[in-house]
Length: 421
Image 1 (cartoon, rainbow, N blue to C red):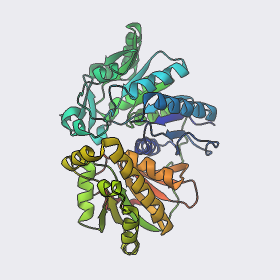
Image 2 (image 1 turned 30 degrees about the horizontal axis):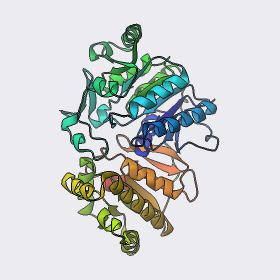
Image 3 (image 1 turned 90 degrees about the vertical axis):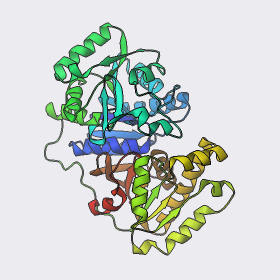
Image 4 (image 1 turned 135 degrees about the horizontal axis):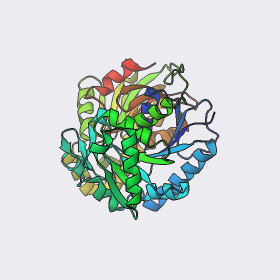
């Protein structure tokens, strides 16, 4: 049978996040890096295409997303999800709205939903407002994001600024009544001219109900939590293999390292914990900009320490330091310098025998897997909500954990090694 679900993710860690959710809920899943050129792996229930489109120009994001859709259609997928971050990272130009509308046009559908809720990671949508933990998104630290600052938690308002279609809202009062009531709310929204409906969700049970209500929608959009509902719907209709271990991965030996480019508050805490327990080397983008061979310095430092256990190479910094660096270098240049340096370091570490690697930050993960030439990943079991171990389908085989900046417990970098297959 062809895959049931085709996903288009706007960054690499977000793709892994969704793929891990699907595996956890019984869907055999592979993640492809960029728009694939080869046929998909066999015996899959879902394929996630990981793009790097969150912060590029909207027209480029649309083109890449449509190419991914065409490949997934050729692979035989019957339903599609456009996956973005559970913090709805975007700007007034996009890219969530433009990409969603382009996919709707390609699939010839006049209605879809937007639901970034992920209760396991503290993301809830209520009355159309996105909460991160106990606070509104724009009070969570995301208002200081260097590339996609989120200063408005009202998703209807945010998405309407990016969309030509009318944006509506399905409130939790309807969602809490189950899939049939949500479907009635969808029908009402369509009659009112709504093209994309923000859907409230507070609990995993809400996501299951939403997944059931979306069974006839060719396209849905949302965070990785929505994968819970989509998988539950496929299972309810007897479309998933009952006895398959969806998260089975081969064991991979080798040296281990952590590379962190994210500056999110969660990653800042994780870096602080790791620094107290393992050797750590900090990358300063200002020195990279000055022409210092920071890559060589980091690799030389690592070469004498790798045999003792996992080590950390990081560019993570607090908000004040990030602002200072961006003022000197510019936000885009600073980000590019960090990504380039960390990707080059990852390549040299693998040449030294590193085969088990944790990468923190979506943009960093995209740069690293691109530099390593990874074309696809088999998805394994979860380390923390939204972050699974994976293994590359290329040679040499690598065990990779690609962590979104906002995800994971404070001790994530330390405990991840104990969950390796």
